[in-house]
Length: 390
Image 1: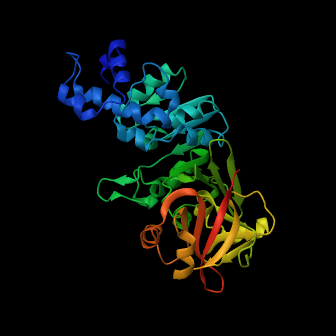
Image 2: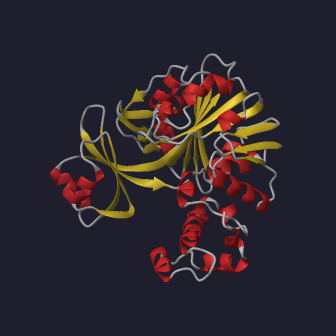
Image 3: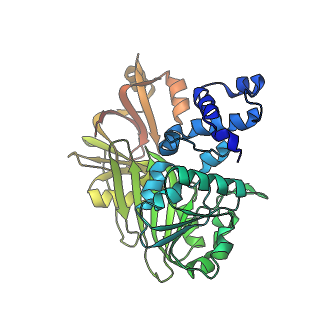
């Protein structure tokens, strides 16, 4: 850390240049004799990245920022707040503390929070910021896995890096750093509950094959974009697990839980009055038959993950009124898209959206929604819809 960065005049310079072009600032050089322009550029870039993702940090004074890659890799405040609601007890150890967003939110629920970070600079930055944010978190520049030897915690939390020095970007847990699978028994011996954050790209079946004692899986999406998977493990647990999906939106959150042990059967029909498209978290869960059975609505086709009903229901995803079903033929499409804009979605359809737009000269936007899909009789159709507001 360069303490000069925290000088009020330097902080003012950073704030005044949040919207400036970084390369232009670098070419001009630093206006401060004892501070390198690269350090200033780093603060500006990282603070700008934090504006929407980390508003508490952005709006607080004297916050010191790490390189922007650390901001990109950290949890957002939205997902960290969600995680904090999953913990209870007296002690929690964040074994891969990083910038400290998760630790900060854990401290709102648990009295004693331990932040372990192997990168000395990042550890010091987090400790400084915690003081500025007026939270009492124990910070240690240590390898978190090694640091908890001979210690016990109510909760252990770990967010392994999805980048391996030898393999680059990875998706298997055993290839992450640290290697969770190699240390799993060791970690479970030191806690009641182990929470593992993984990439949204991790296949759930692969995670289940690699892990054991899984009690819950949380699929967390923000505005229909899956951000992370949370795996909750308990050493004493043997048996089934539950999948919780949540799509956190600006005004509401869509929640849906699945017990994979309960066998369900989907029903099928041609399109009815209303059409439903599951949100990204539900889609990630793969619980397509469960949706049909639970909500008593029909699927359009086994591999077409769209649903339909004659009566409008609450649903974890987008809802539409079906205006008409149109055969996918040249003549019908020409009549449909003449001088029209449309929002296009494909589900179980051989052509991608980009190709469809180019082929039929359909502009993007407007209030018209077109679903290009396949019905249970194998026919390709276009479902022309009007979106129903929440």
